Amino acid sequence: MGPLESGAKLMEAGRWNEALDLFERAADAYHRAGDRDLEANALGNIGYYLQSRGEYERALTYHEKALTIHQTSGNKYDEAIDFCNFGHCYMGLNRLDKAEEYSLMSLELSRKVGNREGEADQLCNLAQIYQKVGDKHRALEYSTRSTKIYEELGLKQGVASNLTSIGFIHMEEGQLREGLGFFLRALHLYRDVKHREGEANSLSNIGLAYWQSGKLEEAIEHVDAALRIDREIGNRPGEAKTSANLGRMHLARGEAAEALACYIHAASLCDSMGVVADRASVTVPMRVIALDVGKSAFMKACSKEGIPKSRCQAMWQEMRDDADEH
Image (cartoon, rainbow, N blue to C red; front, top):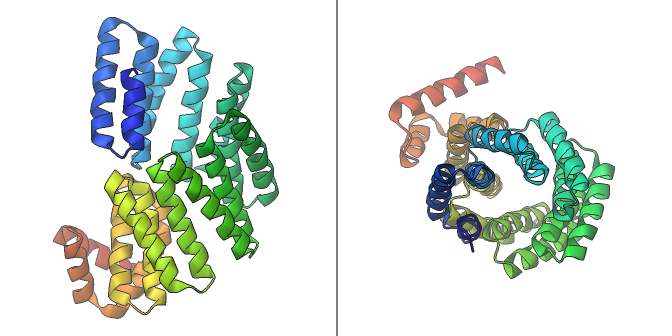
């Protein structure tokens, strides 16, 4: 097994820092050896590491370097993978038009080079994009087509990703039991292939399904479990989303202090990743709770999060200004 494959295995096991070190050493070694394609692949893996941690802008710089090398060498197979990574980064930045553009480019190129797994990946990515923009019909169509290819190839992780997308479509239609069923099936598959990030995501989704079904205790139990895994493996985008969901649940249970801590943590993570869209989704409830409990309680919660006092003061003033505007 080469260094790039070993690094991917380390990431799947949640040993992200070891994976990054391996990718960086591999990129340097391939560069010195003059192996441009493998250097590009190593750079792409560094980009993938960064995007998995929510550092999308930094990730794009590495994917751009990899793409330049692959296009220069005429490596269409890996060029399609580079386009795929661009799509993921733009999806993380909530720039869905760019995400769709690059995913379609990757889909077309994957089909040209006969990469069936790549084709399935892009159909899956496009399904998620169409779901985000509210095109449920196309989301379901692309998920179904992607699942068929993954099943033919025996790729359980891909199947699980599509089951998750289909589960959310059912949830949006108010079919909570059906949605929960798809999330549970996805969880089983992710655990079967030992994919920790997918396991955490599934637990969080199951928690949301229980919450919408009125089962608050079961919801918090599953979301707590997801948050522990996200922290363990360093999955900051997942941690931010899960922390915000946990805040909503604590608020529903009347636990304002716990909810505020969750929202502050989620906002802090989004700030550090440069993700404006996800931060906006926690700003309003954070502001409502903070202004209700008062400045002293808010500053104390910020301090526990490790946020500098000057930044806490600025956040408080921003919330006061926003409240005055509304």
